[in-house]
Length: 249
Image 1 (cartoon, rainbow, N blue to C red):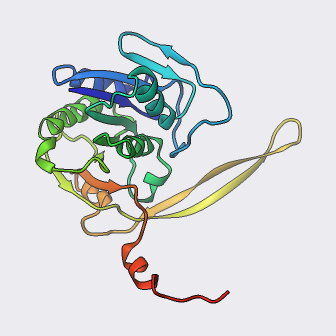
Image 2: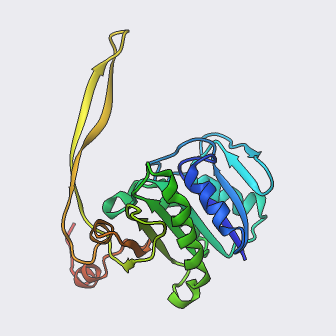
């Protein structure tokens, strides 16, 4: 088995290193990650400048692009159009639940893998500051991929996994979930630099709706959240309802 590892926290991230270590007994891995943090880069692709690939050890590569760029360059550049058997993006330093998946570079890499027909998994750690939690999370992922065939998931569907706060030495409890819903109270903070020019920080507080069966509910109860997601945004119910509606222009 060949597994492509990537992330949006950069080639030196603790979560990525934990995955590499935990997957060594399971499969051959190739790492291709950004050379710096690309959090909230979403599914962006670099089209207006060239990208350079740097080798950072055996089967370890980086570039000055986004997570989506990394997947593209790994498959079409390094692997010469060979599709890996599995793509894992993460382990992200922080959660990716609810609407946040639309901002996430971690999830975007899994989306890119899924669009290529590669079985893909996005992995995030809500216990981000606890460095001792990454290896147990990675070992959970290693055990999961040994049983991945049981899920019978088509390549167009990818898994989004979020780990709760680690309370023991390993993660065992899990729940299959849907995406939760987060409500933002966004705030744009305006400041002035020493030259008198204005600059802005996007910040704000948020709250989660208590939705039964959601990723947030599972993580809040100390369980690993496993959500099957898809890229197709079509709302079939609305499409079926409006497809025969005649409009006049």
